[in-house]
Amino acid sequence: KLALLYVSVWAAGFCLVPTLMAYNYVPPEILDFQQRYPTVGFAWILQDLFSSICMNFNFLFFYGFMGYLLCAWLIRHSRLPDTAGFSLLCFLLYLIATIAIFILTNLRSETLGQPNQLFFYHLSPFILLQALSAFLCLRHFNAKNPVISELSDKSYWIYLLHLLILKFFVSAFPLPWSRLNAVLIPAYAAAIFLTAYLASIPLRSLELRLLRLLKIS
Image (cartoon, rainbow, N blue to C red; front, side, top):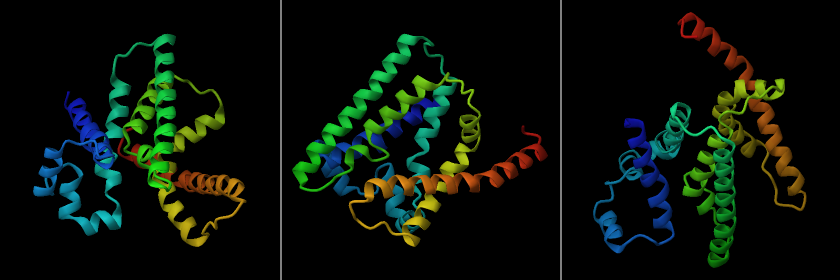
């Protein structure tokens, strides 16, 4: 119940309200309250009190994205229907969220006269809907392919490492704007993924050894 309460508050405070505020769909009294009390809020408290730390270390990845971890935990421990119809419903929700992101991003970008990522930002309500529906749809998927199993075993380390590797690639190998970007961007992504995977192998091995020493696994 505590995890569900946290996720509910998180979804409203980090996903729904910021998106509505950015799109000017928030009642004036809420905007006025935010202006008079700028430190009252979910993300604003930490941003205001520890702005330099949050900017330098991007703590948003901790306090902002923590809701996704708890969402996954809730899905793992929930008693939801395990039927083809329920999986199909989740798949349809995923498609609806994807189409909504495409249409709304198009409209907002045209209105602003420049590309805008509001609706496909990591904490967008539509991205949250995509993530939940995808996890619910695939939660009982049992991969028999050894490649998928290997990548799944290293997936958390790949997730943790890819941001650091991405920053290194961006600074060391800046990507110029050209007509070859349709080829260069996928190659860039593949190189980052491969590097993160190779780096995850010794780290995952060290993790397993530590867990054995602690008699956790």
